[in-house]
Length: 385
Ligand code: MLT
Image (cartoon, rainbow, N blue to C red):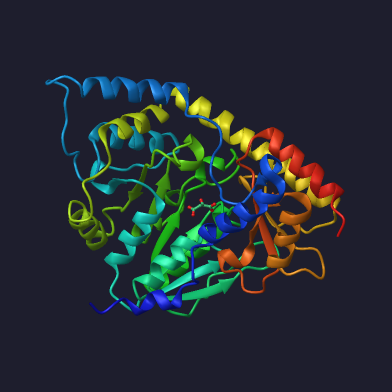
């Protein structure tokens, strides 16, 4: 067979696969004292109310009347209705036909790329979530990188054409949260050039009451934006796998193609998982989510304070489970992360893993336990450079 040449345009391994190798080497020196602030994987357990609902759903499947085979390709109505009610709370009206339930970010990014014609130009403010950019490369689309300034901001390139724009807010990795005004500029830009806005809301649950919680609160967004949401980081579903995409009916062709893709792409998400997802929107689930995101944001604050004490320039704001900062003078990102691993027993991700172009930044994940994060903060303060 003739292989896809686009793989040759990727780094040899996915950033977190490469980091796992470095972590295993560091574990030889540090053993259980090694603190992994690399990959953003949640550490706290599943919410009680979600687990109870999943157990009930599994029990139903054990009897003939309750048993279910293939799920509906775009998701069960009970989950779509729970999602619709959640959007209603912030004043966004959706219907079932606009929601496509799936198993998380990566597969859906590939799915969205498959809706585009080949050689499409996609803008990526960088640093950005590597899987988003790499799915575009693998599909043979042309990523155009727009480097962010020192505050994590990027302005839309009015006047320049493109087919799609990928935005993530709060951003992974930088933690930059777009204001309503900034998001409005991107919506205006996308509309002006006829581009689709892929809005990655993986961290929307981290937006505090002052910030904008949905791209659809911006006027005109339903005509150009597709929103992708996940249960991973707000509800602890990194291992369970659940997400959904909103493809508004105002974008007729896109909605039709996404609908057409369902069924050909996969056989949907399990009943048990979707029942757990619906429980996330219960009063108890929402209260737990707020507690959980507060816990991780407090972890991030502990790390930010330690880095500030060392005089490092922090990019991230407070609505993020990540801390993104500039390396101390004289260090490359790879060099500084290697030093952190060797001398402090802390694993961090170099900014270049997120396609940051100068190799000057690093990211810390605040998802580990409070104890580990506090210990890592102490080690940063004590680190001799
Ligand atoms: C991260 O940024 O750490 C991610 O969530 C891990 C991934 O999905 O690759």
